[in-house]
Image (cartoon, rainbow, N blue to C red; front, side, top):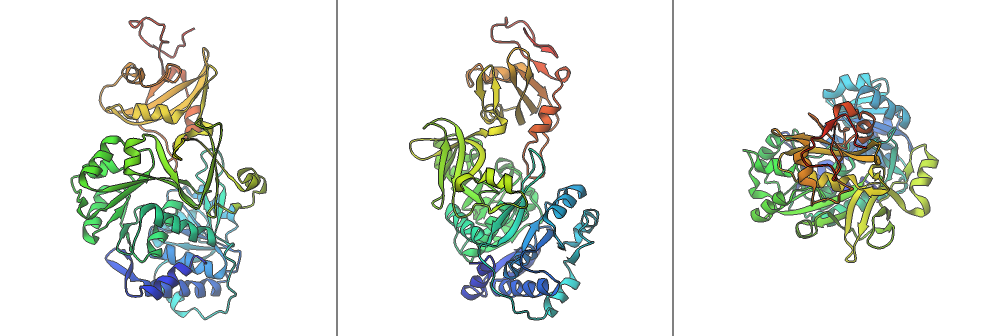
Length: 504
């Protein structure tokens, strides 16, 4: 199957059902199929050929899906661009992808111009593009290979320049089936499309809902005050809250009566939030995956999250997984399955390294228990080697996040004269909280070698456009004069921490 076959299938099986609802408008499955064909004709008439790349800069509107369907029928690939990127970052991705064509939402024209998209053969969504879709001549094109790339999605670039992950038609079709199974989607569901469609997860859950004949509801934005009215209006049954489940449930506009399921990042929700969901009768699924893996890899249930803290669930059936370590110990997760990326565009050496022997090396450290449950430990590059002991930053972050005054936290390794490398916590707090208070919280919850020796109270944790913490920047910005170095455990308790000094 090609990506567009999902639209054609819907047009045949459920022609008059609502496929997409947004901004007071609706698109039926019949119309979705017709527009996939219209985009195929318009792209071909505009000079798009098999193997070409089409840069796509847009907010969440149906055209983002429809243009990708059209590209799949031509044999081309879309390059979804993060709308929060700088013009320089966009220009890099467009040039790296060698895109000669672009599709731009009119609200983003200034960014598109600065990023160089308007100098390409460009369709700006609106009346002119609608006329082009209507008037495009029929073109006889051969059916593309299902293994052909249909999307070039860029990694977040937390450790260097972003790389373009090539995902094939076949990978996306299988990934859609994975999401259907992970979330138990049906044609009766109304999915809240709150995740951006330039992200693998946002695109993946949208396609999955369309694959089973349900309705995709596109809200005006990701904030709870923008989402709850839409949930109530459309009777949304399945949703994710990008700005946090707990925050959304506490919002004054919260109206969860229609919801049957919420989903989010596995092993990240606090137990009290999960308990609230259980009491409301709303199910939960935690997801672990990656762009290189083609979206979801494993899924946890509400019971898993409550009874097995830290688990990211079990692998979905189409995957083989292995942990590069002895049983029960943390090691790099290896994944093999039909949804994996074809490779990194233009980077054969990086592709060979990431896909050695057909296994994706995720760069994530996980542990696999005897019951087949995976537990996320850390990113391999985030592990701290302190005094010869391995400290996993994610574990320390989870403990600190449980402190009632902690709003956000990031843990990194920094140079330390006593330990060579020591654990540092950068913390955003509410109220007057001292590093000594946070240290007391960690004692008894973490082994002594894991407790942060360095603390820095900050206004915000820097993140990239995908929400990932920029730990490379945090490590590089470490200044002992701005941080607090706590005493060692053998220091008398009345000896106060020194600012900017290190215990011998």
